[in-house]
Length: 386
Image 1 (cartoon, rainbow, N blue to C red):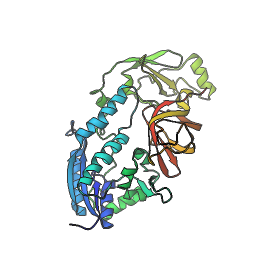
Image 2: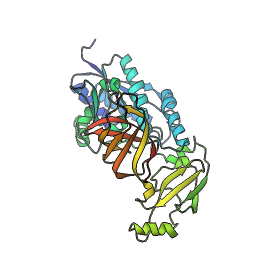
Image 3: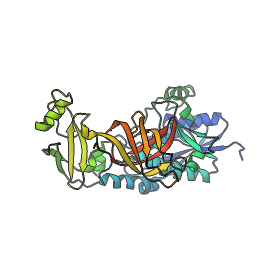
Image 4: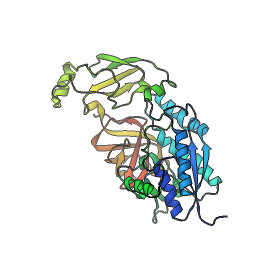
């Protein structure tokens, strides 16, 4: 029996997890690879690449010289992630299934499986870091060192037990360095492009996929004056801030709305200014759209969030922090309110000195103190200006 600490690595077939496994072996760990199969429906189609990914993961394991096991979590995924994803969309919200997948599958089902294999730790190819705070005795989730690849936003629901068992080796590196290492050691997937899209949807058109699972109920598209300017195919198929696929490109604003646009300096408004989804009225099955990226309906000075998770196990004290309301955005200064500080606070409020764009119910608001990801919650509503 090996005396080296055993680490089980989630091998996805991508370059990040491959280099993760290599680095851990270099550090003297006994490394075992696990390929997680999380989706079975139509996985032989052109859009779902799990079979190709497993071949790539097996080839990586062969080059590195580690064992690999194929584990099927599709049932757990459907119960815990996909069903919740559909519920949220049906309710008119826009969930982030990658966050739920990390909390429920990669750092729960996968972690449990790894522990049964005698692992001391698990590791993934996420761009973030974990450190033990000597003063508090708690594990902290930190941003990855490559700001363009940081994935702490997707991992903000991890708790102390999960963080204490997890390693993120590539979080200490920039993506260019990861690619260089992969080429240097001859990994077959060194130049494989990064995966995009949600794992179970792949690269296929999103609306086409949702069509299979969510009933369509068409309704009116209205502008802020109440004028009906088109028909939507079902509120579930749209998200706040959406610009493409509205089918109303040639329609002009008019009257008071035109004047409001011109007052904000949008010359030629109504002719070429793009339309954006601004509100969804579930009760009246109405999609409200506005012209112009900076329309007041798209801007919010604050938000409400619930279903909070704090990495430390207790909420941070109210005060000044930074937050992301979507993955691809810079940290925004904010003030945290309504945090009880006794470990029971499930809801919180954020106020921003600068308006936030298209704050979307169902997405996650994630809080930061410098590089430390404190946790976050699911956006339940955006605040409007008084």
